[in-house]
Length: 258
Length: 258
Image (cartoon, rainbow over all chains, first blue to last red; front, side, top):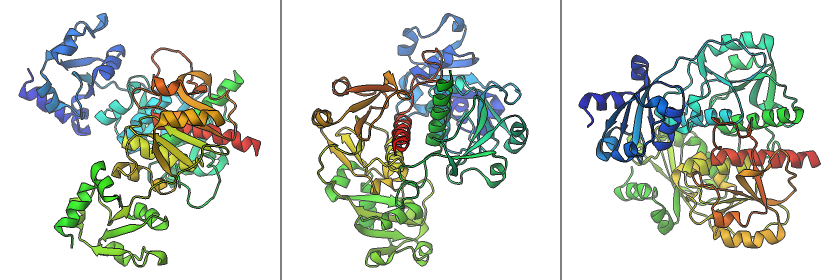
């Protein structure tokens, strides 16, 4: 049974304001809740249909988690998915730990990524390519937005994302590490020599990297199109696509060295 | 003024059935309608606010196109966008021409791509990297779906997409050309030697390339993750992301040869 208060809480968590107030976020579906259960995130309540409950999805470490049985029509009422899938979990937001930039790793720095689908895809792709940390400007979409969580396919439980004053972060980072910017001009990504550490800055979907942040980029890099400068081609790549291609190239060059 | 019939026509074009019946599709917003006007697609009607009309957006070749002035509230009623933007055009679907596979080009073959956002991003990215042609299984989402059109950022006006029996197409293609499949196993993309022509098969978002189509793949290729096989990493990449990374690598190797 889903109480009125529970139902109100779950739907309120669609908004960033209430997620911050409650320190909670929502995860949905068999696969994604499976990823949550396998992570070290604390869970408040799992709302699940009889089908999920009888499927013995709980690992031993989670036997004590609170489970509420609900029916499909209740699930539909609170779900953010077009096709709700057996289970919805309410989990506690984990604060990301402080860290020191950036001796021996690649860091992804996001300047005002706004689209939740893009953000989720960026996190998933960074995870695939072994990026260990993401830094995001305070104007970047909240990773605990349900659409980001779902689009990340669980990678949001693995990569820490630090929201910070990006300008100040890069001022310090550039002292220790090259700062690469994904731009529409600069050295071709295929020709660039990428080391074992660095910061990669990805800009907003419509406006790219802001002027202020561009001034802190030490290496301007561009993804070569097939016929550079030919009119009538696509003007740019999607922000998450650009991120993925940069991460592929970083990983390709790293594996050549190993 | 927007008549009731016009309004009904525009909203009916959200559905594939009516797009096929009418041979029409919808394009929205200043930038995208600009791309449409610059293309060789025939336009039926442009519905635009005074602001757009007074902005002199029409190239000389389009002076004879039918323009209906509408107000913002009418535009909002028929728009598919969260924030409608001055103009909506109804254009004629262009049938793609027959072609012969595939002596001197790279062809992208899509096996059941279902998500309109993915489809649009795939077309945009293929355009950036100079792919000249896309072949799609009949179960792939319709490119004239408004979400595909918008996500393609105009690239849908430049790259022909042929819907066909993919199985039969690949049976013929593999006689003339290598057929690469983007899979979770196979040779690493970074190690593969990609020639100047080929077919690249991308599979469905959830199920990958179907078994039947896999049997026609001559080269199984995988995108290397940072630490192959490590548990807890992302399980896969999004279908459009995989497409983009393959296209980047094809283009990188082609430019090395030139």
